[in-house]
Each structure stands twice: as C-alpha cells, then as structure tokens.
Amino acid sequence: MTQEAVSRQTVFPEGPAAAAGLLEPALAQAAGEGAEPVSLTIDYGVAATPGARVSVEAGVDRATRTLVFAYGRVLSEEGAVLATGAAVFRRINAR
Image (cartoon, rainbow, N blue to C red; front, side, top):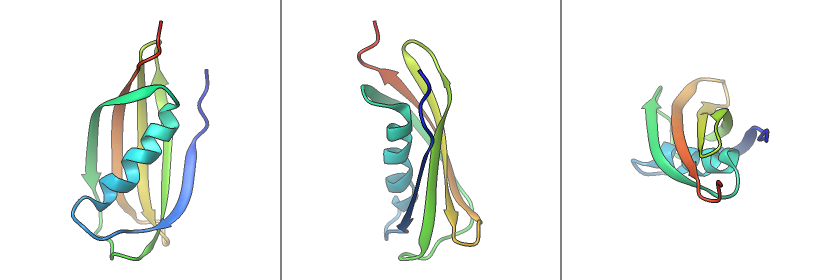
C-alpha cells in the first residue's frame, strides 16, 4: 500500500509548539488511516514569524505490516527550512 505525499499551504501559528502543531497532523495524514503515533522527533531550523505563510510537506519513508515511518518539513515562502520532523506510527488495524 503506497501512501500519497501530503503538501499544504498555511500560516505559522503563535506559540512554542507551532512547528509540532503543523507537522504532527501532516505526518499522521501521510501515515494513513488506522495509525497511532509512537514517537515524534522535531529539529528546528530558522525562526519563523507567527502569521508567516508556510508550506507543510510530509511523506512515508518506509512502512511495514505494523509500523509506518514518516518524515516532514515546514518551509517558509522563500524555501527556508523552519523545521523537520520524523515520526513512527503503529498501525492499529494491522493483522
């Protein structure tokens, strides 16, 4: 089963967990229905201004019968990397 990559335009929210709040839902969407988070790692790049327009991208690096390994990033309009993330999801409906 191949998952489609996720890409969306949005604005950068306020708060210390802004990048996580953008990345986690995109990673979960990329992992697909029936997956629950096991771990999430975020690495921060350049600082973003709240309200700035950003792009969020996520995709699946590898998937097994029970686990999905996803990656993503938040980019400024100029293409600067604001944050990258990697997550592992457990497929709860795996048999």
